Amino acid sequence: GVGGARHRPGPPRDADTSRRMQAVRQAMCCRGLPHRIQPAAGYWQLPTQGKSCAVLAGTHKNIPAGISSARILDHFWEISLDSYLIPKTKAHFSFSKDMESNVNTAGKHLGKLDADAPGLANTVESLLNLRFIQDQVKQLLDLNPRIAAQVPVKDLPVLYVLESLGLNPRSTFKVLERCPELLGEKEHRLQSRIDNLRKHGLGEGRLQRVVVHCPHILNLTAKQVNNTVRFFKDKCIFTGQQVTEILQTSPNVLFEKCEELEYKFQFAYFRMGIKQAEIVNSGIFRVSMEELRQRHIFLERLGRYQTPDKKGQTQIINPKPKAIFTTTEDYFLAKVAMSSWEEFDTFKKLLRREEMEKELENQEDRGTSAEQSDSEEDEELSDIEDEGLSLVK
View: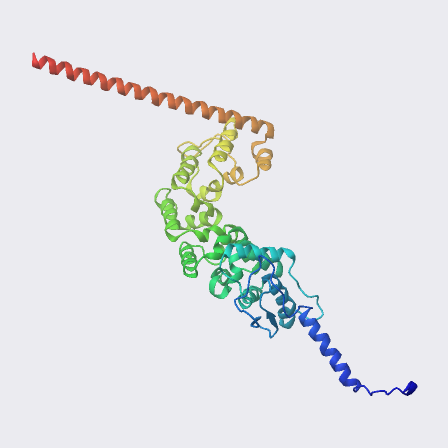
């Protein structure tokens, strides 16, 4: 060496390269996580204490006790997903600050319950196995923070029930977004309600469409559904096939009172002269009673609709009920009523005034009839008293 300094021969080149590569791999796995992180206020504590550590599902990487659930999820995305779901060439996933706030929100909802790392990791892994994407997992945790401490295989049967129906992850997420309370339903209840809907004709294809567009239908008991079906068959004389069509096209009828449904049916049947087969396809059960009356009476006063006589004949050609009730207001005015929006708006105001005046008249008539009945009772009592006095004399 120079100046008499002694030079120690370095390790072989291959061994040095091997150590550097090993250090790089460890750095990529750990991503700079320290061996011990003190939990911040509001973070969940792992149930393990001291030197105990949790092992993420599907990995052998240790995470120290006291780390926040959001960081656990961060680590899970970086390691577990890299291990068996995502090619090494792709960028690592990482949860944003929104995820951390979601998890902290979940902690407030859970109260004393703690979210341990394996449970949280299993939840995320189970959702991923159901082909949910990262953003959907975040939103599911936001919809129901309690699932952060649950394993979907055991405590979220709705995910697997909907998957068994043939719904893809996007449709399943749409269902849960519209009706998040389904996340807490039991499997036997959901399956019983689905079986009952199938019994009423909502088979494959039909049932999936109904559940996606009206997921709250799975919150209804079999008794509620059966009562509505029985009403349509007994009171409205619909056939079983016609009831099935109504349930498919207008599932909202299951949430309405039978009195309101009967009023709509009678208005369409007697006032408009529409028969059962046309009522099924008319869409009257998808609109409010107010809109039903407004459109019909407006056409009637314009001379564009006429109630058929006893033989079902009219002097004009009535528009199809479907064109009246299932179209937008713009289409209805332009193509069916052939009128302007201003004219229709003025008509609706006048119709409301007429209805209010009619209601006042009815109240006055009821009050007058009540007074008359009271006076008649007083006269009868006085007559009885007079007869009694005459008998005493």
